[in-house]
Length: 222
Image (cartoon, one colour):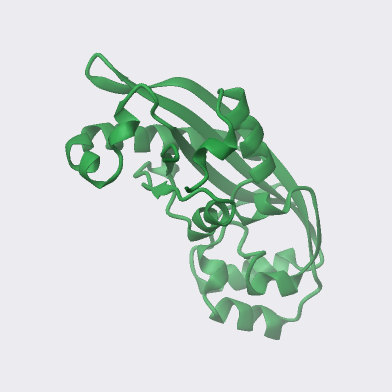
């Protein structure tokens, strides 16, 4: 049986990336209030948010451990617990930091700024190794890393922007686009890790897992 891997995120794109790579994560989104964190450096921002989300999920898991042990979380509270991953992504463009657009009008205005420009997509990754001791769940190891990918946006028309926003896809995406969806038509090229743009950097995650003493194949679905 594979080790449990908890994804502290509601992102279907992140869950799908892991599933396609052989890991079937337990999705347990955090309830962390992102508005508590006000930072102007994008790498620092995504790292802090990713770590706080992972910690919030860990606390929630422990507080609800009685019920959760019945639905597959049992080994999280043992000496071989598995891992908890928190993530956060933002787009940096011309010195401004952008997360998900507030609404359709915001998304249209954002794309009118983004077209023909080059942005940087930052994703923070926080990996926790939880263990239970003295009546609480704690991280025995915590790694936090950011990955950045440069995104070259196409010179798209207002009509294309409005049609794209009307699909609803950019409204739920950091950076206002989904590289794995219709947003791929609106991107000329990227420089760097492509899965980072989708929600998490698989190469970075593999290295982080190794750094805390785990082999990625230990989490492959069997």
